[in-house]
Length: 110
Image 1 (cartoon, one colour):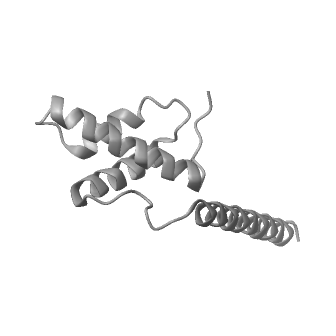
Image 2: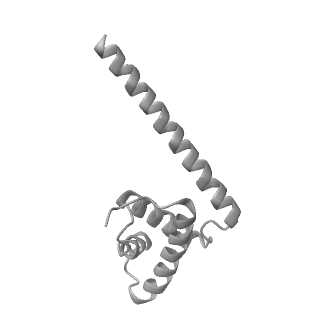
Image 3: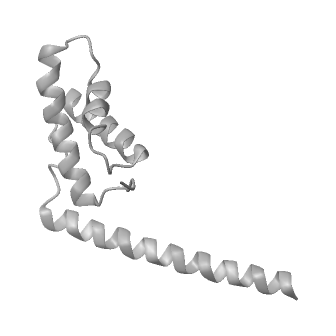
């Protein structure tokens, strides 16, 4: 299975699940750190990209330590809008990279 980065709504869902995983396992393993527990829990998700797993685990550990609900200030609409913005930015970056690559090829070939 190919690894991929999660969408923003998926990221929010994974962060909430990681906090629940931390809460569950800190009672059983009090010596384990919150980040380590979250990282271990997210490691069970086969498609999750390693960089994303690391970032989500760090965010979940921070939320657990502060008692904050992950993405609490974001509505479902906010998360969807952020994902659309992220996709648009990604398309723009790809278009710019392709244009720059074509420009460099033209310079090289002349």
